[in-house]
Image (cartoon, rainbow, N blue to C red):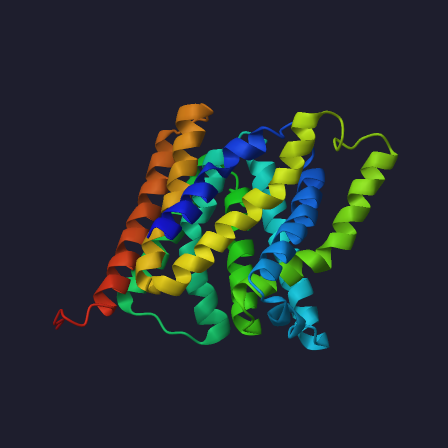
Length: 287
């Protein structure tokens, strides 16, 4: 549980880190995040003597799949940084509240999974929350939906590939590193890059790899120990922290429309979580 708290707590407070880089474009931030993550992760798998796990993934079909999942993940990271640094932390939290239910839908559509009546009710409530927001505001919360579906798509892709979590993530970042390095060098060549501009900025860019990879390490440790049904409850911690940061620290608006939309989605998550708990409790006799 400590590992789970560290992982999801870190993800919840990540907006504070990206706000420190608000003067940079999302593309530059993501390029550094990918490039330095690859170094950190390679060092990590080397330290754990698991380089052979990465080597086993060097097959053409697996590499093609990992290029696709890596691209989706990088897009998710970029959209998240863009949302945070354009004063839309509340909307990013909405995306990660929706994400568990998007995973459910993707499982039904692509994996042939079946849902009970309570799960369908949860999906309908979440859809109602998003629909209410669109109806009242007159615009689609595209950052929230983009984050939910991109991270859901990434999870689906990794599930279909069936590769080890840490080895797969390491190879994903390594595959994207040449492109990331090219973007960094291009920005530097045009005098638009922030690397080396001053010590604080350079340390923050270097640290972007650490704050990306370390929570994933903690998550992997938690996933090995905790039942998935227990781990699932911790996933609401990160968007909850993000929502509090957006409203209390960054003074983003939280109107009655937000309250109704979030309320329906929270109700959906409550119904869905109760359904999972009900299914996973063998000691309880259900009619």
